[in-house]
Image: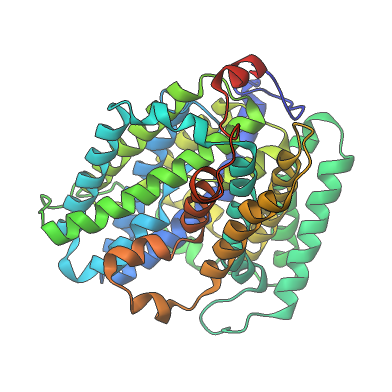
Length: 444
Protein backbone atom coordinates (compact mmCIF):
# COMPACT_ATOMS: atom_id res chain seq x y z
CA UNK A 1 0.00 0.00 0.00
CA UNK A 2 1.29 3.48 -0.88
CA UNK A 3 2.52 5.86 1.82
CA UNK A 4 1.25 9.29 0.67
CA UNK A 5 2.62 11.50 3.47
CA UNK A 6 5.87 9.78 4.44
CA UNK A 7 4.56 7.90 7.46
CA UNK A 8 7.03 6.24 9.81
CA UNK A 9 4.67 3.26 9.95
CA UNK A 10 2.10 2.34 7.31
CA UNK A 11 -1.41 1.12 8.02
CA UNK A 12 -0.46 -2.58 8.17
CA UNK A 13 2.99 -2.17 9.73
CA UNK A 14 3.57 -3.59 13.21
CA UNK A 15 5.82 -1.33 15.31
CA UNK A 16 8.05 -2.99 17.94
CA UNK A 17 6.07 -3.75 21.10
CA UNK A 18 7.52 -0.89 23.19
CA UNK A 19 6.92 1.70 20.48
CA UNK A 20 3.45 0.31 19.89
CA UNK A 21 2.71 0.62 23.61
CA UNK A 22 3.78 4.26 23.61
CA UNK A 23 1.75 5.02 20.48
CA UNK A 24 -1.29 3.29 21.98
CA UNK A 25 -0.88 5.27 25.20
CA UNK A 26 -0.59 8.49 23.17
CA UNK A 27 -3.93 7.76 21.44
CA UNK A 28 -5.50 6.90 24.82
CA UNK A 29 -4.41 10.14 26.51
CA UNK A 30 -5.85 12.15 23.61
CA UNK A 31 -9.10 10.15 23.47
CA UNK A 32 -10.02 9.55 27.13
CA UNK A 33 -11.08 13.13 28.00
CA UNK A 34 -13.62 13.08 25.15
CA UNK A 35 -15.17 9.85 26.42
CA UNK A 36 -15.19 11.24 29.97
CA UNK A 37 -16.87 14.53 28.95
CA UNK A 38 -19.56 12.89 26.80
CA UNK A 39 -20.28 10.28 29.49
CA UNK A 40 -20.52 12.99 32.15
CA UNK A 41 -22.97 15.07 30.08
CA UNK A 42 -25.12 12.02 29.37
CA UNK A 43 -25.21 10.81 32.97
CA UNK A 44 -26.25 14.28 34.18
CA UNK A 45 -29.18 14.40 31.73
CA UNK A 46 -30.20 10.87 32.71
CA UNK A 47 -30.16 11.83 36.40
CA UNK A 48 -27.47 9.33 37.38
CA UNK A 49 -25.69 9.84 40.70
CA UNK A 50 -22.53 8.58 42.43
CA UNK A 51 -21.80 4.94 41.65
CA UNK A 52 -24.35 5.01 38.79
CA UNK A 53 -22.24 7.64 36.98
CA UNK A 54 -19.07 5.57 37.47
CA UNK A 55 -20.86 2.47 36.15
CA UNK A 56 -22.10 4.39 33.09
CA UNK A 57 -18.55 5.57 32.35
CA UNK A 58 -17.21 2.02 32.75
CA UNK A 59 -19.77 0.70 30.29
CA UNK A 60 -18.78 3.36 27.75
CA UNK A 61 -15.10 2.48 28.15
CA UNK A 62 -15.86 -1.22 27.58
CA UNK A 63 -18.02 -0.39 24.58
CA UNK A 64 -15.55 2.06 23.03
CA UNK A 65 -12.55 -0.18 23.60
CA UNK A 66 -14.38 -3.16 22.10
CA UNK A 67 -15.52 -1.24 19.00
CA UNK A 68 -12.02 0.21 18.41
CA UNK A 69 -10.55 -3.31 18.51
CA UNK A 70 -13.29 -4.61 16.18
CA UNK A 71 -12.86 -1.75 13.69
CA UNK A 72 -9.06 -1.84 13.46
CA UNK A 73 -8.86 -5.64 13.14
CA UNK A 74 -11.97 -6.37 11.06
CA UNK A 75 -14.01 -3.23 10.22
CA UNK A 76 -12.43 -0.37 8.27
CA UNK A 77 -8.96 -1.58 9.41
CA UNK A 78 -7.64 1.97 9.57
CA UNK A 79 -5.96 3.86 12.46
CA UNK A 80 -9.21 5.56 13.44
CA UNK A 81 -10.63 6.18 16.90
CA UNK A 82 -14.25 5.07 17.20
CA UNK A 83 -16.00 6.60 20.17
CA UNK A 84 -19.24 8.11 21.49
CA UNK A 85 -21.15 9.86 18.70
CA UNK A 86 -22.33 13.44 19.22
CA UNK A 87 -25.33 12.74 16.95
CA UNK A 88 -26.35 9.85 19.21
CA UNK A 89 -25.57 11.98 22.27
CA UNK A 90 -27.91 14.73 21.04
CA UNK A 91 -30.71 12.19 20.57
CA UNK A 92 -30.03 10.81 24.05
CA UNK A 93 -30.23 14.29 25.61
CA UNK A 94 -33.47 15.10 23.79
CA UNK A 95 -35.07 11.76 24.69
CA UNK A 96 -33.76 11.51 28.28
CA UNK A 97 -37.29 12.04 29.72
CA UNK A 98 -38.37 8.78 28.05
CA UNK A 99 -35.91 6.82 30.21
CA UNK A 100 -32.81 4.76 29.44
CA UNK A 101 -34.77 1.63 28.45
CA UNK A 102 -36.37 3.38 25.44
CA UNK A 103 -33.04 5.01 24.52
CA UNK A 104 -31.46 1.54 24.52
CA UNK A 105 -34.17 0.35 22.14
CA UNK A 106 -33.58 3.34 19.86
CA UNK A 107 -29.84 2.64 19.63
CA UNK A 108 -30.47 -1.04 18.86
CA UNK A 109 -32.83 0.00 16.05
CA UNK A 110 -30.26 2.49 14.70
CA UNK A 111 -27.49 -0.10 14.82
CA UNK A 112 -29.64 -2.66 12.97
CA UNK A 113 -30.43 0.01 10.36
CA UNK A 114 -26.71 0.53 9.63
CA UNK A 115 -26.11 -3.21 9.47
CA UNK A 116 -28.86 -3.62 6.86
CA UNK A 117 -27.49 -0.69 4.83
CA UNK A 118 -23.92 -2.01 4.92
CA UNK A 119 -24.92 -5.40 3.51
CA UNK A 120 -27.53 -4.11 1.04
CA UNK A 121 -25.03 -3.00 -1.57
CA UNK A 122 -25.80 0.69 -0.89
CA UNK A 123 -22.21 1.38 0.20
CA UNK A 124 -20.85 0.35 -3.20
CA UNK A 125 -22.54 3.32 -4.82
CA UNK A 126 -20.98 6.01 -2.60
CA UNK A 127 -17.35 5.80 -3.76
CA UNK A 128 -17.84 8.07 -6.78
CA UNK A 129 -19.26 10.76 -4.49
CA UNK A 130 -15.96 11.38 -2.70
CA UNK A 131 -14.10 13.64 -5.14
CA UNK A 132 -11.07 15.78 -4.24
CA UNK A 133 -13.39 18.70 -3.47
CA UNK A 134 -15.57 16.60 -1.16
CA UNK A 135 -12.69 15.00 0.74
CA UNK A 136 -10.82 18.30 1.06
CA UNK A 137 -13.94 19.98 2.47
CA UNK A 138 -14.41 17.15 4.98
CA UNK A 139 -10.77 17.49 6.12
CA UNK A 140 -11.35 21.18 6.89
CA UNK A 141 -14.89 20.73 8.22
CA UNK A 142 -13.72 18.29 10.88
CA UNK A 143 -11.36 20.95 12.20
CA UNK A 144 -13.76 23.89 11.89
CA UNK A 145 -16.66 22.14 13.65
CA UNK A 146 -14.42 21.13 16.56
CA UNK A 147 -13.23 24.71 17.18
CA UNK A 148 -15.96 25.64 19.72
CA UNK A 149 -15.28 22.44 21.70
CA UNK A 150 -11.48 22.81 21.59
CA UNK A 151 -11.48 26.55 22.30
CA UNK A 152 -13.46 25.97 25.50
CA UNK A 153 -10.83 23.45 26.59
CA UNK A 154 -7.93 25.78 25.77
CA UNK A 155 -9.22 28.70 27.86
CA UNK A 156 -10.32 26.53 30.81
CA UNK A 157 -14.07 27.08 30.45
CA UNK A 158 -15.71 25.15 33.33
CA UNK A 159 -18.05 25.62 36.32
CA UNK A 160 -16.77 28.52 38.39
CA UNK A 161 -14.92 29.99 35.41
CA UNK A 162 -17.61 30.81 32.81
CA UNK A 163 -15.21 33.09 30.92
CA UNK A 164 -12.14 30.90 31.23
CA UNK A 165 -8.73 31.97 32.58
CA UNK A 166 -5.97 33.86 30.72
CA UNK A 167 -3.25 31.77 32.43
CA UNK A 168 -4.85 28.56 31.13
CA UNK A 169 -4.89 29.92 27.59
CA UNK A 170 -1.25 31.01 27.92
CA UNK A 171 -0.22 27.49 29.03
CA UNK A 172 -2.21 26.02 26.13
CA UNK A 173 -0.32 28.23 23.67
CA UNK A 174 3.02 27.13 25.17
CA UNK A 175 2.02 23.47 24.84
CA UNK A 176 0.90 24.02 21.25
CA UNK A 177 4.21 25.69 20.34
CA UNK A 178 6.18 22.93 22.07
CA UNK A 179 4.35 20.21 20.08
CA UNK A 180 4.89 22.06 16.79
CA UNK A 181 8.62 22.48 17.46
CA UNK A 182 9.05 18.84 18.54
CA UNK A 183 7.09 17.56 15.55
CA UNK A 184 9.38 19.50 13.22
CA UNK A 185 12.80 19.30 14.89
CA UNK A 186 12.97 16.02 16.79
CA UNK A 187 14.58 13.11 14.94
CA UNK A 188 13.01 9.74 14.09
CA UNK A 189 11.00 7.98 16.77
CA UNK A 190 10.80 10.85 19.33
CA UNK A 191 9.15 12.99 16.66
CA UNK A 192 6.29 10.50 16.34
CA UNK A 193 5.59 10.97 20.07
CA UNK A 194 5.43 14.76 19.84
CA UNK A 195 1.78 14.91 20.97
CA UNK A 196 2.45 12.71 24.01
CA UNK A 197 5.62 14.63 24.90
CA UNK A 198 3.73 17.92 24.60
CA UNK A 199 0.95 16.62 26.85
CA UNK A 200 3.52 15.51 29.45
CA UNK A 201 5.19 18.94 29.25
CA UNK A 202 1.87 20.74 29.75
CA UNK A 203 0.85 18.48 32.63
CA UNK A 204 4.18 19.04 34.43
CA UNK A 205 3.88 22.80 33.85
CA UNK A 206 0.40 22.81 35.43
CA UNK A 207 1.74 20.76 38.35
CA UNK A 208 4.66 23.17 38.94
CA UNK A 209 2.21 26.09 38.89
CA UNK A 210 -0.01 24.31 41.44
CA UNK A 211 -2.88 23.86 39.02
CA UNK A 212 -3.24 20.07 39.28
CA UNK A 213 -6.04 18.71 41.47
CA UNK A 214 -5.12 15.17 42.55
CA UNK A 215 -7.12 15.03 45.81
CA UNK A 216 -9.67 12.58 44.43
CA UNK A 217 -6.92 10.15 43.41
CA UNK A 218 -6.47 8.70 46.89
CA UNK A 219 -10.18 7.93 47.16
CA UNK A 220 -10.32 6.09 43.82
CA UNK A 221 -10.20 2.26 44.12
CA UNK A 222 -7.54 0.33 42.21
CA UNK A 223 -9.96 -2.23 40.81
CA UNK A 224 -13.70 -1.96 40.27
CA UNK A 225 -15.94 -4.35 38.34
CA UNK A 226 -18.89 -2.86 36.41
CA UNK A 227 -21.90 -4.38 38.18
CA UNK A 228 -24.40 -4.96 36.80
CA UNK A 229 -22.76 -5.01 33.38
CA UNK A 230 -26.10 -5.07 31.55
CA UNK A 231 -28.98 -2.83 32.74
CA UNK A 232 -32.66 -3.66 32.33
CA UNK A 233 -34.09 -4.93 29.02
CA UNK A 234 -34.59 -2.33 26.26
CA UNK A 235 -38.01 -0.98 25.31
CA UNK A 236 -39.17 0.32 21.94
CA UNK A 237 -41.18 3.39 20.98
CA UNK A 238 -41.96 4.61 17.45
CA UNK A 239 -41.02 8.21 18.26
CA UNK A 240 -37.71 7.24 19.90
CA UNK A 241 -36.89 4.78 17.12
CA UNK A 242 -37.49 7.35 14.36
CA UNK A 243 -35.31 9.90 16.14
CA UNK A 244 -32.44 7.42 16.44
CA UNK A 245 -32.80 6.34 12.81
CA UNK A 246 -32.20 9.96 11.80
CA UNK A 247 -29.26 10.16 14.21
CA UNK A 248 -27.72 7.04 12.68
CA UNK A 249 -28.03 8.51 9.19
CA UNK A 250 -25.82 11.31 10.55
CA UNK A 251 -23.50 8.68 12.08
CA UNK A 252 -23.20 6.97 8.69
CA UNK A 253 -22.38 10.22 6.86
CA UNK A 254 -19.83 11.13 9.54
CA UNK A 255 -18.27 7.66 9.37
CA UNK A 256 -18.03 7.72 5.57
CA UNK A 257 -16.30 11.10 5.65
CA UNK A 258 -13.78 9.95 8.26
CA UNK A 259 -12.93 6.68 6.50
CA UNK A 260 -12.33 8.40 3.17
CA UNK A 261 -10.34 11.18 4.88
CA UNK A 262 -7.98 8.80 6.67
CA UNK A 263 -7.73 6.72 3.49
CA UNK A 264 -6.19 9.74 1.75
CA UNK A 265 -3.43 9.78 4.39
CA UNK A 266 -2.57 6.11 4.89
CA UNK A 267 -3.52 4.80 1.42
CA UNK A 268 -6.95 4.43 -0.18
CA UNK A 269 -6.86 0.73 -1.01
CA UNK A 270 -9.98 -1.45 -1.16
CA UNK A 271 -12.23 1.41 -0.07
CA UNK A 272 -15.54 -0.25 -0.97
CA UNK A 273 -14.78 -3.20 1.30
CA UNK A 274 -13.45 -0.97 4.11
CA UNK A 275 -16.53 1.24 4.02
CA UNK A 276 -18.89 -1.76 4.05
CA UNK A 277 -17.18 -3.38 7.03
CA UNK A 278 -16.63 -0.07 8.83
CA UNK A 279 -20.30 0.92 8.69
CA UNK A 280 -21.30 -2.64 9.67
CA UNK A 281 -19.01 -2.48 12.72
CA UNK A 282 -20.53 0.90 13.65
CA UNK A 283 -23.95 -0.74 13.43
CA UNK A 284 -22.78 -3.52 15.75
CA UNK A 285 -21.50 -0.81 18.09
CA UNK A 286 -24.99 0.72 18.17
CA UNK A 287 -26.54 -2.64 19.02
CA UNK A 288 -23.97 -3.25 21.79
CA UNK A 289 -24.58 0.28 23.12
CA UNK A 290 -28.28 -0.54 23.36
CA UNK A 291 -27.57 -3.78 25.20
CA UNK A 292 -25.01 -2.27 27.61
CA UNK A 293 -26.78 1.04 28.10
CA UNK A 294 -23.90 3.10 26.69
CA UNK A 295 -23.57 5.62 23.84
CA UNK A 296 -23.38 4.45 20.21
CA UNK A 297 -20.05 5.03 18.48
CA UNK A 298 -18.81 6.75 15.32
CA UNK A 299 -15.43 7.04 13.59
CA UNK A 300 -13.65 10.18 14.86
CA UNK A 301 -12.38 12.57 12.18
CA UNK A 302 -9.76 13.88 14.62
CA UNK A 303 -7.78 10.70 13.90
CA UNK A 304 -6.53 12.14 10.60
CA UNK A 305 -4.87 15.10 12.32
CA UNK A 306 -3.15 12.89 14.90
CA UNK A 307 -1.70 10.71 12.13
CA UNK A 308 -0.45 13.75 10.20
CA UNK A 309 1.37 15.18 13.24
CA UNK A 310 2.82 11.93 14.61
CA UNK A 311 3.42 10.22 11.21
CA UNK A 312 2.46 6.91 12.86
CA UNK A 313 -0.23 5.40 10.64
CA UNK A 314 -0.30 1.81 11.89
CA UNK A 315 -3.79 0.56 12.75
CA UNK A 316 -2.28 -1.69 15.43
CA UNK A 317 -1.36 1.34 17.56
CA UNK A 318 -5.08 2.18 17.73
CA UNK A 319 -5.91 -1.49 18.41
CA UNK A 320 -3.71 -1.25 21.50
CA UNK A 321 -5.53 1.96 22.48
CA UNK A 322 -8.75 -0.08 22.37
CA UNK A 323 -7.28 -2.69 24.71
CA UNK A 324 -6.08 0.04 27.10
CA UNK A 325 -9.54 1.66 27.17
CA UNK A 326 -11.11 -1.75 27.82
CA UNK A 327 -8.72 -2.39 30.75
CA UNK A 328 -9.21 1.10 32.19
CA UNK A 329 -12.87 0.22 32.77
CA UNK A 330 -11.65 -2.17 35.49
CA UNK A 331 -8.60 -0.28 36.81
CA UNK A 332 -10.06 2.99 37.99
CA UNK A 333 -6.89 4.32 39.62
CA UNK A 334 -5.05 4.35 36.29
CA UNK A 335 -8.11 5.81 34.60
CA UNK A 336 -8.19 8.63 37.16
CA UNK A 337 -4.47 9.38 36.62
CA UNK A 338 -4.93 9.77 32.85
CA UNK A 339 -8.17 11.70 33.34
CA UNK A 340 -6.25 14.14 35.61
CA UNK A 341 -4.39 15.52 32.56
CA UNK A 342 -5.74 19.08 32.23
CA UNK A 343 -8.33 19.46 29.49
CA UNK A 344 -6.52 22.60 28.28
CA UNK A 345 -3.39 20.54 27.57
CA UNK A 346 -5.33 17.95 25.60
CA UNK A 347 -7.09 20.77 23.75
CA UNK A 348 -3.75 22.31 22.75
CA UNK A 349 -2.60 18.95 21.37
CA UNK A 350 -5.84 18.61 19.41
CA UNK A 351 -5.37 22.06 17.86
CA UNK A 352 -2.01 21.02 16.39
CA UNK A 353 -3.62 17.94 14.85
CA UNK A 354 -6.53 19.96 13.49
CA UNK A 355 -4.16 22.56 12.02
CA UNK A 356 -2.27 19.85 10.13
CA UNK A 357 -5.62 18.52 8.94
CA UNK A 358 -6.64 21.91 7.53
CA UNK A 359 -3.36 22.11 5.61
CA UNK A 360 -3.86 18.61 4.20
CA UNK A 361 -7.40 19.52 3.14
CA UNK A 362 -6.23 22.62 1.26
CA UNK A 363 -3.61 20.58 -0.61
CA UNK A 364 -6.27 18.15 -1.88
CA UNK A 365 -8.17 20.75 -3.87
CA UNK A 366 -5.44 21.17 -6.48
CA UNK A 367 -3.45 17.93 -6.18
CA UNK A 368 -4.48 16.81 -9.69
CA UNK A 369 -2.92 19.96 -11.15
CA UNK A 370 -6.23 21.63 -12.01
CA UNK A 371 -6.98 25.28 -11.32
CA UNK A 372 -10.01 26.12 -9.18
CA UNK A 373 -12.73 28.25 -10.74
CA UNK A 374 -15.78 30.16 -9.46
CA UNK A 375 -17.87 27.00 -9.28
CA UNK A 376 -15.21 25.28 -7.10
CA UNK A 377 -15.04 28.28 -4.78
CA UNK A 378 -18.75 27.88 -4.01
CA UNK A 379 -18.62 24.09 -3.69
CA UNK A 380 -15.75 24.41 -1.22
CA UNK A 381 -16.61 27.64 0.56
CA UNK A 382 -20.34 27.30 1.28
CA UNK A 383 -20.17 23.94 3.15
CA UNK A 384 -17.17 25.07 5.23
CA UNK A 385 -18.80 28.40 6.08
CA UNK A 386 -22.17 26.86 6.94
CA UNK A 387 -20.58 24.05 8.96
CA UNK A 388 -18.71 26.67 11.00
CA UNK A 389 -21.83 28.81 11.50
CA UNK A 390 -23.90 25.82 12.65
CA UNK A 391 -21.19 24.97 15.19
CA UNK A 392 -21.44 28.34 16.95
CA UNK A 393 -25.22 28.84 16.93
CA UNK A 394 -26.70 28.97 20.46
CA UNK A 395 -28.32 25.86 21.92
CA UNK A 396 -31.59 27.78 22.42
CA UNK A 397 -31.99 28.05 18.63
CA UNK A 398 -31.93 24.26 18.16
CA UNK A 399 -34.30 23.63 21.05
CA UNK A 400 -36.99 25.40 19.06
CA UNK A 401 -36.68 22.77 16.29
CA UNK A 402 -38.43 19.38 16.19
CA UNK A 403 -36.37 16.69 17.93
CA UNK A 404 -35.74 14.77 14.68
CA UNK A 405 -34.33 17.91 12.99
CA UNK A 406 -32.34 18.75 16.12
CA UNK A 407 -30.24 15.58 15.83
CA UNK A 408 -29.19 16.42 12.26
CA UNK A 409 -28.99 20.21 12.11
CA UNK A 410 -26.98 20.80 15.28
CA UNK A 411 -24.03 18.86 13.86
CA UNK A 412 -22.07 21.28 11.67
CA UNK A 413 -19.98 18.45 10.22
CA UNK A 414 -23.06 16.59 8.97
CA UNK A 415 -24.62 19.77 7.54
CA UNK A 416 -21.37 20.60 5.75
CA UNK A 417 -20.94 17.09 4.30
CA UNK A 418 -24.52 17.05 3.00
CA UNK A 419 -24.07 20.51 1.45
CA UNK A 420 -20.80 19.67 -0.33
CA UNK A 421 -22.32 16.46 -1.73
CA UNK A 422 -25.40 18.35 -2.96
CA UNK A 423 -23.36 21.16 -4.54
CA UNK A 424 -20.72 18.91 -6.10
CA UNK A 425 -23.04 16.29 -7.56
CA UNK A 426 -26.48 17.87 -8.00
CA UNK A 427 -26.89 21.63 -7.70
CA UNK A 428 -23.58 22.64 -9.33
CA UNK A 429 -22.85 19.35 -11.08
CA UNK A 430 -20.18 19.42 -13.79
CA UNK A 431 -19.59 16.53 -16.19
CA UNK A 432 -16.44 14.56 -15.46
CA UNK A 433 -16.72 15.35 -11.76
CA UNK A 434 -17.18 11.77 -10.56
CA UNK A 435 -14.40 9.95 -8.80
CA UNK A 436 -12.86 7.13 -10.82
CA UNK A 437 -12.52 3.95 -8.72
CA UNK A 438 -10.06 2.45 -11.20
CA UNK A 439 -7.83 5.50 -10.77
CA UNK A 440 -8.01 5.14 -6.99
CA UNK A 441 -6.96 1.54 -7.06
CA UNK A 442 -4.11 2.40 -9.42
CA UNK A 443 -2.83 4.99 -6.93
CA UNK A 444 -3.07 2.59 -3.98
